[in-house]
Length: 270
Image 1 (tube, rainbow, N blue to C red):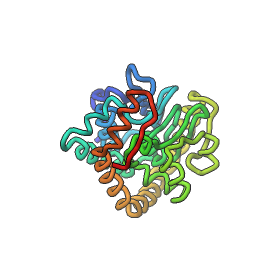
Image 2: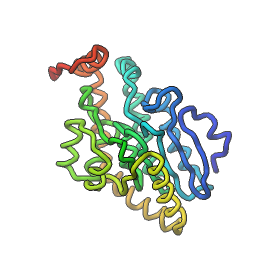
Image 3: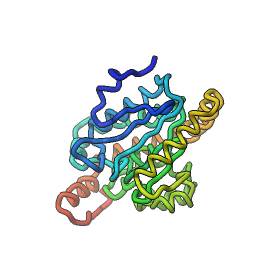
Image 4: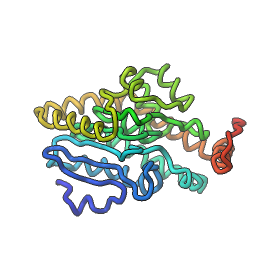
């Protein structure tokens, strides 16, 4: 099976183009240049990697964003829905599908972080096979800043890239990193001066991988990702379960109120 134009047409926030053997997927949310994750975006990302597992025409995939953002994290207007009974648990299942299906895509995935990548955006960037980043962008996981656990893959992606202690330095503070720091820490393979150069660099990497022996490239990726899943499966499940718990916390409610009132939150641990 190969997704055709009709198959791709039902995505509202994702744009699909082909450049030779590379399938280019651009996150481009209308009327939101930060590409924030809302229910629709989360739904589309859930189905994106399912579709990519069926891709047979391309030999590599490039994921890119727009000038200001790859995706700058969760849309705060969406967050109140998580207080609805059972809603967080449903989203948790979709979140697991995003990460696990991404790891199961047979094609090499290159991510071009053209603009800010936060939360889930950062996890997708770090779980890609190769990642390049614009010097105008920032990469981070600020879940703790709104009183919730980093349950979108951050507890898997960051320790894999930089080890437990440095990962906790960023996951426990929510501090972002620059492209230069990301290169020095081994989070990404290349920094580019601006978004346009970032896409060009990402495409060059994708084309290089597409030119390789397909079975050798794909099977090597499969073997590495099998190790990732075996090593991190328990931690990922625990983090998403605990994130669901924190969605019901008073601290999460306080964080939303602080955002609305444009002030610093006063966390109590409840």
